[in-house]
Structures are given as C-alpha cells and as structure tokens.
Amino acid sequence: MFGILFLLFCDDINQTMNDLNLTVNNEEPSKDRRLPDRIFKLFRGQNEQEVINILKRAQDKEDEIWLHIDKRNKNKNTTMTSKIQLQMYGEFKRVFESYLFKEFSTQAKSVNNALLILGESSFGVLFLNTKNEVLGVQNYYGTWSAPKGHLKIKNDGTLEIPWETLLRELFEELSIKLKRSKSEKTINTENIGHFLALNKDNFLQCRLESRPGTGDGLRLIGLLIVHVDEKIWKFSLKDNKENKAIKWLNIDDIIRNKPEIGHDMYYTLRPFVRYLKDH
Image (tube, rainbow, N blue to C red; front, side, top):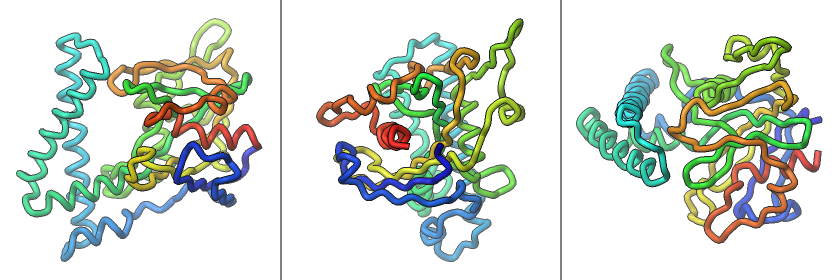
C-alpha cells in the first residue's frame, strides 16, 4: 500500500495537495550515524569525538533535569495542566541555560545551537487501524500528533538512526498490550517485531514548518506506518508529563477539519493522513 518514502515540502500547512511540492522516493530510513556537518562547524578546532562527547553530556543533563522536575511533581501529586507544563518548561530552560554557561562557558551558545539542530528532526510511529483511523496523542496545548521524538547520541558515542529513535520514543510515551483469549501480552522493543509488521518500506517523511506562520524554519518528521487491529491492540499513555490524551482519530475528520487562526491542532498529522487517503 505504501512502499515509498515521501518528502513533502510545504510553506503553508493550509495549502491544498495541488499546491504542494511533492517528491516521492523509494528509500528506507537513513542509516547514517554521523552528526550533521552543520554541528561540527559550530565547534572550530575540535575533532568529531570531542564534539560528540560535549553533546552527549548536554543531552544527559537535559534528561537529568527533566527527571528531577517530573519526580518532584509526582511527589507533590501535582495535577498536570497546560499552565503547570508551561511552568515546567520555564524551569527547565532556566536550569539548563545556567548549566550550559557554567559547564561550557564561551561554547554555551554553540552547544545550545547544536542541540537545536538535532531537534529539527522527529521520528515516530503512526498506527493505522481497520476503521481508517490513526492513533494520536494530544499535548496540553491541544495539538494532536503521533508519538515521536528527537535523535539522541547513544552511550557508544554514535547518533541514533531514525529507526532506533522511533522505537525508543514509542515505548517512552506509550504502554502497548496485545489482547489474547485469556491474557494480555505486554509489548516492548524486544518483542514488537514478533507481533507487528514493521516494514521499513512504510516509512514516510515530511518537511513542514516548525511552528506554522512564525517563519521558524522547516522541521523533518518521519513516521513508520503500522497496521493494527484495534480490537486486539490496546494503547495507553505511560504518564501525563508530555501528553494528556490518546485516542483513535478518523482520517476524514482530520482532513475536513479547518484550522483555527494561529493554531492547527492536526498540523503534524495532516500531510500524512492526506497521503494515506490518496494511496
């Protein structure tokens, strides 16, 4: 049904399909583990391994700060809301910026810019059921998307490939169970391939604005399309730190939806479901 990789370049997410510059290629997800050359240009006089070590330390610190904030909120039984999440992001930004300047001094800006470059790409899984619905998660600003996230540097010093990122992010965000006649099977990274067809030919990529209408530049989103029978597969959020809801979304409803001014709650899903509808 899919068997292709598509690259969709759109300056306005409200454009019709006829207005879009659509390029189709028979390619699998990238297997390149090197950091983008743009990152190395930020660190003059340092070799690749030194740059990788710097960014790995920074990414680990990001995780540490979020873990601390999340743990504190859980201990306080804090009810997550958009306001609370905004406060969390504000606190994270203050603590992380302080860390960057203390740890990297004159290189703080370069480290931050390098992390922003890595953040220009997101990879995840888009489940499609027998009712022509896709599985979406909703954040605290009302936006629906597929579970996805950014590339990370692994402990061995290499960059994740998109395939590794999408599986890691999937199980960081969701709990997945397969219903059986008398029991449920918990699905994880080790066994998912035994129960679901993870076909790399069904990997789709799309370039769209980071934040529509802001001129912030393009981001790359790559989603693996996976077919499931909704009667036997059960999905739930692991926590409510990033998202507040999860549900099946009808493809036609997404396509027919007219975005509000300044906010399209389906903007990262819209080009994908349009493509699925047409193919």
